[in-house]
Image 1 (cartoon, rainbow, N blue to C red):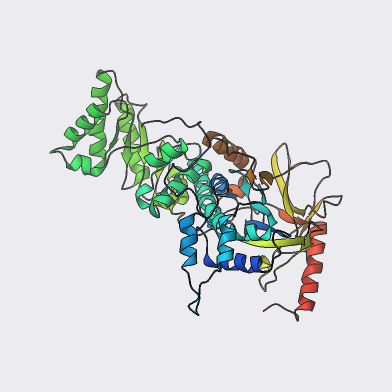
Image 2 (spheres, rainbow, N blue to C red):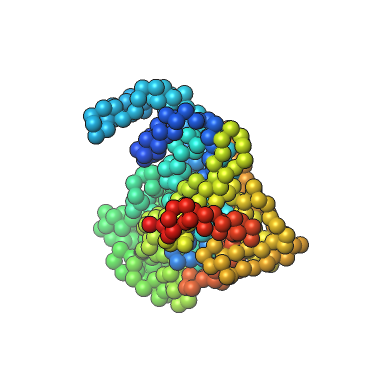
Length: 505
């Protein structure tokens, strides 16, 4: 299996794969709202705070893995409206047939440069529902324009990184390799998924473009078509071994899996006699538990104990866990469709909500959106996430408002059930998760190499209680609002209901 170095420069999309600027990677209503803000003549005096978060953990699991920040920084660094962008916008019309945007507004877009501050969780950080992954603060005009792009750049990779982490947990230390290019949702989906899978813990990809773009190890075997192109399976195996003596992994299930293993053993012994070695065999169908056990016996019996057994065939974390419980002798798990498509969970459901405003550099004024669904009522303020822990691992997370601070003793209130509260020991270690990555529109923190991000993710998962990692009825990791923030939120809810006629529609 061919290797590429995995500790190179920061993760980036390939040069020229996208246009230089992605200003039109947005929904129409972001620009119609920006137009309305501009017409009020209050920008840049009016500022806002937005938070990007999700309301429910994906896959019925106990955790998620933050991902997508590197693409966010690339997007913000290059964000500008090019002449052809403006020409396209100038041609849009409303229901009355008139131009949707006036020319003076398009002139404003021509000079647009992002001016906000952005704080973010480092990629690979475990994160939970209601916690901000990003906080955007600054001119409301700017913060509004980037909403859709930030969501699409964070939602999908976070979903895939989480799926990859679950697969890695299920594999119990055996390597997981991403094999999903042909089943991904287009080339962009394939690239994004390969990168996110690496952050979640996958040790390689079959995708050469992703390998080059993100400095990932690349892996591969051969297809059934290779075997069918020859008169016999043994002839196909020998030809492949001759062409790839240092990277020979044989797919053995074209006709009969165990007969294929026996022929692979024959080729493996021939390679050894020439001073080379058979790297592995791949099982792609049938009873993977039984076949891998029998294949291991055949390989070991021939003195080929160093030959790895790879498995593919619509694997996911549940099937991998089951196969391991059955005693399967599989060394490498090759996962395609159910990884790159985030099987079982088509979207993360991340949202981007305004939480505070101010004018002329004055004090921040909290804002709240109400809902009949408790989970959809937003949390006001300039939020930060404080993670508490001890020498055994993470203990609890506190969402707190930087404008209010944290009142001693630290106490968290469940955002979905105010009767559930937890007091945290004042001497417990803690650190705040959101860190500055953009200051006044300038990127100030470059993403680290993939190996560093994957190691951070691995360390994060190791600090969670095992119950949080399990797939069936996982333990709920404690996340709550700081007591003072909870009280302020409650007051705002009551005031908003009184001002707007009782319960929200």
